[in-house]
Image (cartoon, rainbow, N blue to C red; front, top):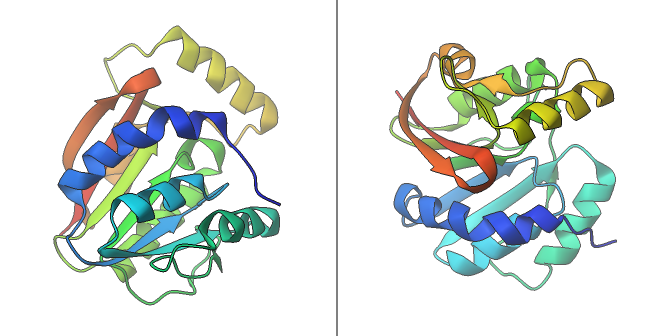
Length: 193
């Protein structure tokens, strides 16, 4: 039931370091596309003053998330949430975190994520994205180029998105911070206008 993603062990500390600077001191953090549940379990332990709401559209992922988070009092039961859906099963959040979804889902999921974040977040609240992105005029690593070929084999709708395209679609948000991360990834911190 409990799934494991090896990359989680490599990237959770660098991600947590940025979260420490960007998350509110208290409130509810919605994680969209929680996957295995390893990230949210680690962050819930690291930031006990926050309540954490995991979510994922995949029933097997929901079971894994529940298993990883079973002993954590500040993690709510995982919700079935499709980022592309017009309605989400949560009414508000103080922050939204989305790790490694944008490149491995259709563009409609990113647009849905941005629309959902607009509905749920108050002005100034963060929407934090992590993963591999492209930037106009900035060459990407060879490993990212190979990864994109693999993604496109899985689905032509998948692929590394340009930061500029995500930012243009995020009309209710300002890109407050772009952080270079290990393994040629980026963290994009948007703030609700």
